[in-house]
Image (cartoon, rainbow, N blue to C red; front, side, top):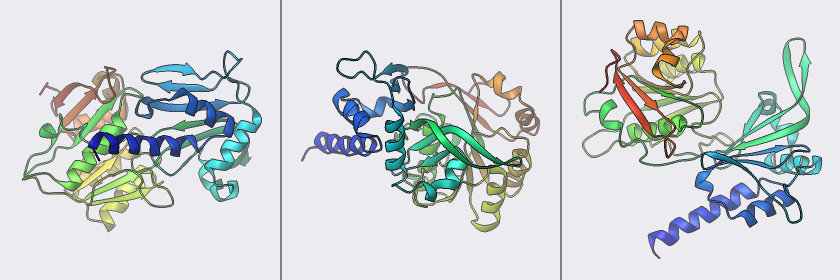
Length: 318
């Protein structure tokens, strides 16, 4: 059997896995649309609103026969939620309290609705009115271009990936982790500790990572970054610690702990530019401390993960 046919079969399996998350009416629309799921990033259901897709860098609506746009019903939302939770909404109460849950395949399902409070504490959510399925994408090799800047045989750079939303920073970080963990040619594999606060990097489902983060990678799933980084250092002896979306003030102490223990740090941050990120108090402190030795800036190009610029720790172009 040819490589092309194998790839096509994998795509069909992945497409069916995604389609089966949704209510029958929506599933049928997805099948009829014959989408390229490598270019599909979000499927959003809002009660009484059109079925909304983020696709190939743009936005579109799915249409049903005889209608200009398919309008999502309460029944669609309820049925989809049943499929996503395996008919056991109670089992996912803790995750729904956080506003999202992870499903098989590493995809992330966000929900909004009526929040139930117990004092200042969120106790749960009811009357769910929106479901947003964010599809996980793995692109092995997407970090090939930048790996020589952050990894040599005897050195790994503390690296910050800067990117606007939907420009592939998490996908890029995922592949960097995989390559560091597996090693390549004369580059030995490294023990990597991942703090996956929002279950996006590993996409763990029932504790098992659905995304390939390499053979020497340990994952703390659903753990706050600041606590998780220190937990990994104490218990797992990582050579590299990786986290997605630094930005909180209490992340600073944890980052210091990582650096002072001799570990290397690979992280991401939201921002449209270097200046945008460095204007934030946390990153001003990290810049002054010369924590990061490489800054990788992604841009909105022809594909996710397009590298716009690479800077060294002093802010000079590499």
